[in-house]
Each structure stands twice: as structure tokens, then as C-alpha cells.
Length: 244
Image (cartoon, rainbow, N blue to C red; front, top):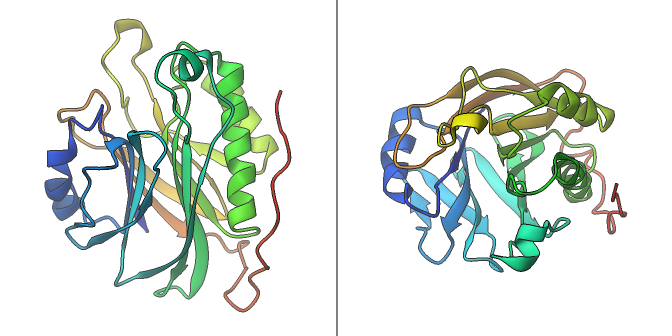
């Protein structure tokens, strides 16, 4: 399974998506900082599952209709940073789609995530990541889950990895840096966290108009993730409060 994640930098890289999809042929595409009022329903063979609605520069997920069936999509508001409250509120920082993989006869959850900006503390972003994982569990409890996006976490990756592992997830960096705008904060901003999947490779793709480079995540189902369509659990209730 191939998933591309791309922060469009205030929608500026929207014109690159058709060529990106045609060249790398992803099964899914996860976007951040896209103008949700100006995105197409189709990009090549990919179909729009859904997008956020409460903030203009939001998130979106596309999928291949010839491989997947979209079951449900939910958007989530995570704990807000001071930047969100004072400047440009970002009400929804997570969108997740529960899918049936018709090729593998499995269910899974794929999500696009955008953490608070660098003006916030790392502790807030860790809170958002943990809360996002818990919210995705409510969308697909026990299902293989892949969350990709802009984690805005250039430093102290080992601390973040240890934090992520506590929730049962794995953190995977790409093969090279994904952000080069600021001299002192160049690094791996665009990441993948997963459970029930083996991440075979995360490749940083060539840069375009955005200050972020797209990443291409290639994964397979692990042997341990044995939830099948017949065994899928019922839809759960609300997630709890996981504030630090």
C-alpha cells in the first residue's frame, strides 16, 4: 500500500498533485494546508473521501476507488495552541477515514494530521499526537492504522518516538529531511505513525512549490493485525480526555 502525504503550504502546491499522482501511483493521498473549498473530487484515479470544513486551510484524504471502499470519515478537533486561539484558529487538526481494502479483504484506518506550529511547545504536540491516536481508535478499534502528516516536530525525535511507543504505535522518519525553509529548523517534519502495519519505506519526494516535501509511505499488513471484516468490532463511543 502506497500513501503520499503533502503539506501544500497554504494551497500553493495544489497544481502539482495530478503529476505527483500520475508519477508515483499512490493508493491514498493525504493533504495538509489545502483550501478545502478549492479541491477537486478526483485527482487522477484518486477520489476524495472527505475534507475538513471548519477551517479554510484544512485536511483532505483521497483514495483509489478500484481498491478501497470508504466506510466512514470523521474530523477531530484536538487541544488548541495559543497560535490557534489568537491568530488563525485551526479547529480540526485530524481527519481519518475507515476503509475496506477490497484487494486484501481487510479494514484499516488512514488519517491526515497537522500538529500545532513551532510557536507551541513540544508537550502540546505530543498531547495532540496521543489524542489523535486515541480518536482514530474510536473510528476503527483494533484496525491497522496509519497516520501521516505534518508533525511540526524537528527536534528531540527520540523522545517523541518513546512517547508514541507507549500508545502502541511506531514512529517512522523518511529517508531524508522534508522541510528546508528555516535555517535552524530544517529536518523531518513530515512523519508516519502506525499500528498493525509494517512500514517498508518512507521516501522523501522531490521538492516543489511548498516549503514541505511530499513523503511516500509504503506499508504492508503485519501478521499480528488479524482483524478481518467478519471480526470487525462495533462502532465505539467517545474517547476520553488525554490532556498532559
